[in-house]
Image 1 (cartoon, rainbow, N blue to C red):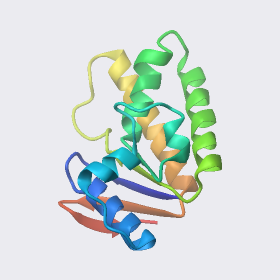
Image 2: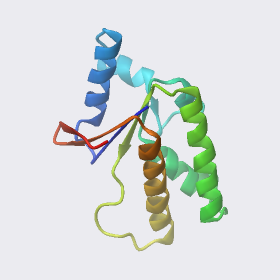
Image 3: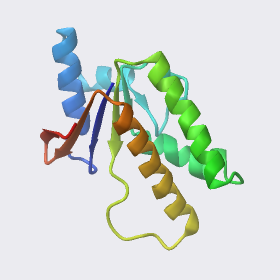
Length: 146
């Protein structure tokens, strides 16, 4: 599993696509790539198990934090995240996970937003600890950090 992180619009998806195309010796259009990927902003939890790339991990985490378990404790939400991520790793150990950095900037006033950032950081640490390689992108330039 490879983990790709960076700020919004820093080239993470393009980097993941180039790596996939090189590994599979193919060329995909942008539309084909996004149809192939599981996107946390719109796709099911199950699609993340089989897609070669999971885009917007932070959006899946936000769905757990804000929608799926509003009444759950932080510990319960972390447990649900761990169970789901374990399934992702078990079903798709050679995939890629792409995540926007969430924790930089002004700390939100709302408790729910702070909790979401905590959960996103928790998930990112878990994935980085399990990944075979971790890349950070800034302005389209990748740096392997693990």
